[in-house]
Image 1 (cartoon, rainbow, N blue to C red):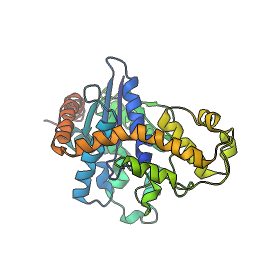
Image 2: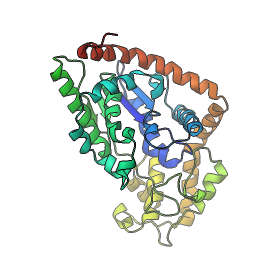
Image 3: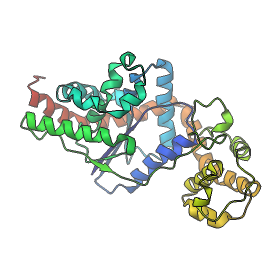
Image 4: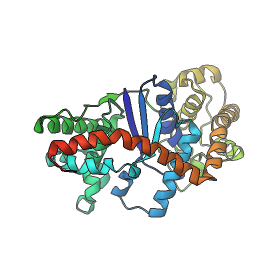
Length: 334
């Protein structure tokens, strides 16, 4: 079993990033059996599909790597690298561009969503990045790819490209990756508005908990989090019309490694004056050690870069045979 997953490097990492993606990666790594491979990459090439600040991208890549390492990604058990350090991703993408069909890309819903009304002004990269996503997994002969609802279409495209390439060139260069359906990541909302996702773009610092926040800052933000005057009920169904309350219960459960139902069973009938301090203790216990490790790592960015390079060296070795087989299949003399 070989699992590959990527994430775009973003700055100002917050609780939503951790619970929605990073914690899921750590759980995936920990579930791997001996002999399995787990590759995690920072998708810095994908970040180029929209306008970027070069210095910000470089800083974000190191910061995201530090967050992953601090959260439990172990370079001895997983391969962690940033995409740009493995040129096979880009090289295979160009070869696959000769196999992918425009009609297939025209059906990709995410391009329509991200380009909005300015489709003519969008970059070629934004239009064609699903082919890069296909190369990301096919170059490693990946067997399984973790996917959410918004990525299922892209995995199907990767399988279509692999099938057509193998058929067109009478080869078995590519393995068709299967979706890996894991426990759904919790959807973490703003602490100031339960109807909006927690986001670094929110102008209010009080809307999110940063992974680098102090214990006092975590406690203060949770104490001031928007709620309502009603006590906690017995079931999640009773929180359907109470988004802020539901969000805090969801955060508690995700950080404590339990279920929202169990949280309510323990705290039913309590007001938020009682619940928030307990939630703050749970959050500090979970996030404090990650923050401390992350801050230490960011004080030695050279070491983080070296860790990425060590992972990239392993990734390059895994990718090389597949890239060479694809080059041979299409007649490139390398």
